Length: 298
Image 1 (cartoon, rainbow, N blue to C red):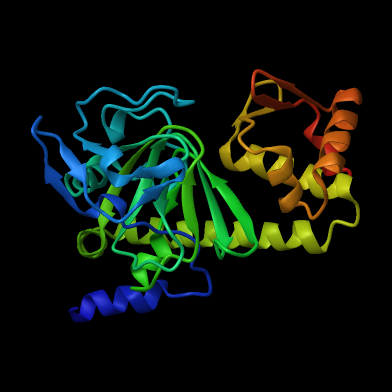
Image 2 (image 1 turned 135 degrees about the vertical axis):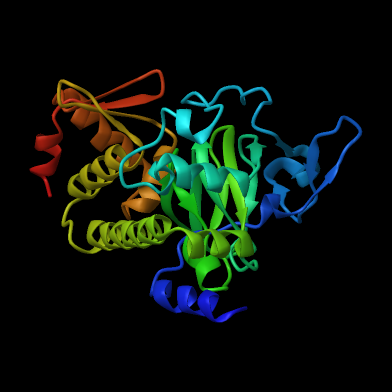
């Protein structure tokens, strides 16, 4: 690694290691001409990386994603201010040249905690669950990542390992960037360097929210209200009427693990929120009608 790469590594090193992935960094050309992943990824229910195909941008969009998949980054409707993919057009075009597009089916493992971070991913569409812990022991859900999120940034910049496991909750489309290509891209674009710092700061804020939800909220209702509010801001949409809408991707049991309570208590508390008219849940979509009421519980 040259001196400038070392400087980048030192500049971005920090206490967080929340994201990364090595899946589509390797591949082979199949009979049909598409690139097939050959990494060591395993999917729940016996899915292997042979089931995951890396496609070029012109290929058909994945089905059942919650938001439409873009034909190119500049035309993507999922780009949000502050996320890494909201770079200027010229810088974004250079980033596209260094990436391909991969399609990940639902309930597939993208990378596993402890693996060497050989590349990072930009989520174009779909949602992934990030967890920490050991498979044979208890684990915790760190957060749900959606379109615009970058997975593996700190691990790649620090030449470390993935500190979480990433699993798709829905079919997803992602852009992998190999570590060396990404470091070269950063060296050539100051705007990208600043955006990378902002993304790491975002991860720090998410980690702080997790700590506050668990340690500072005194009641289950307050912890659940904080979780719903966090999900609304992280993966939701803010409507013109002041409401928030986001997909219901977690089970009540998973929500219970994130709020230190039981599944029955989560079900009962959500029912109370709905009775008060603060939220509604229809067709796997959650709507926060009165975010201020939920904030008032904190």
